[in-house]
Image (tube, rainbow, N blue to C red; front, side, top):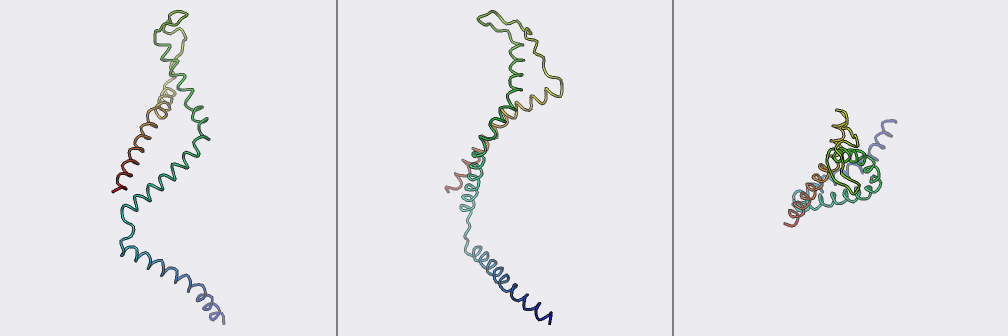
Length: 145
């Protein structure tokens, strides 16, 4: 009796599932045979995905703008103070004496941290953005073919 009920339930659920899997397999095979999904369509899909990702990134950028400034501002101000303190210059109030402000460089591990933070914000990030821009221009040129 249990085997009869179990067989009925198995046939009831397995029929639609197997039909769906057969249909999906057949449609994938038909797409492959027909040659649909050319490289151009793949590149267009990749560009659309990149555009969607950039839109999400742009939408979240204002939320992190204050955080970016709070991270980059102290190392930048300290670096500027060290540079100005070690450079003789003239102001309307008189000449600046080198070392008059007594701004010391940071101790060894923190100086490296400051350098890394400044490089990541002012050198690496713009270069990475430029590379991404060049890559998207190249991808768009390939998609036009």
